[in-house]
Amino acid sequence: MKMTRPLRFCAAGAASALSTSFFTASAALAHHGIDGQTPTNFEDGLMSGLAHPIVGLDHLVFILAAGMASGALGLGLRMPCLFVLSSVAGLYVHLARIALPLTETAVGASILVLGLFLGSRSGFGMRVWAALFVGAGLFHGYAYGESIVGASRWPLFGYLLGLAVVQLALISATHFAGRKLGEGIDNAGPELRHLGALLSVIGTVFFVVALRHGA
Image 1 (tube, rainbow, N blue to C red):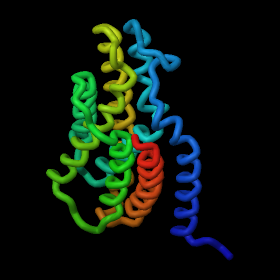
Image 2 (image 1 turned 60 degrees about the horizontal axis):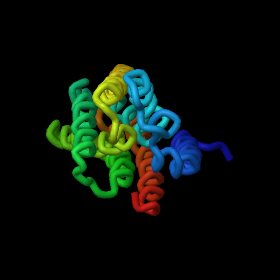
Image 3 (image 1 turned 120 degrees about the horizontal axis):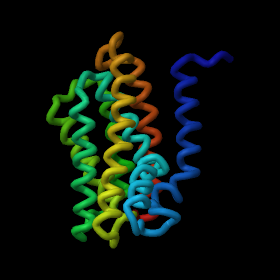
Image 4 (image 1 turned 180 degrees about the vertical axis):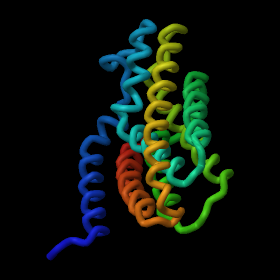
């Protein structure tokens, strides 16, 4: 039997979710510095900051999807930039030893909520999108902070620079790709609903795995 386009999309989403779940336990729950150590100089801090949002699959999924969504829905680049700024704030919350509970669970939930937003036929206002990006940024940034706790000033500066550069680069690239996608569709376009469904599945996997680990 020939699979329809929605069925093919769902099958691909299921395969992606299974692949994600295979890596989640180690990638999402064991974020790293350089070889698992806290960076001790500017170069190590920079490399760790550049790598963390890429090797952390939960962070990478949200960043790429946030850029795509903002471009396709005409939210502007400032919306995902709120996420980047909030992630820096979340990192400092961690460094200030202010506890945010179930951080990794919240990171998974942010992917799930973004997927639900994209899959919904409801039009959300800018304030709602801003709240999502700011809230997500705080928890993603708090998770980033685990790799840099105890580092001195220059490694910390390098880490922050690396985080900002790589996140802005990824978000900008997918934002402009999303703008191309959005030229021929409206907010309820099938492409965005499919993307929302895929993100919801992946976000649920991250959420459940992190919750099972109590992270």
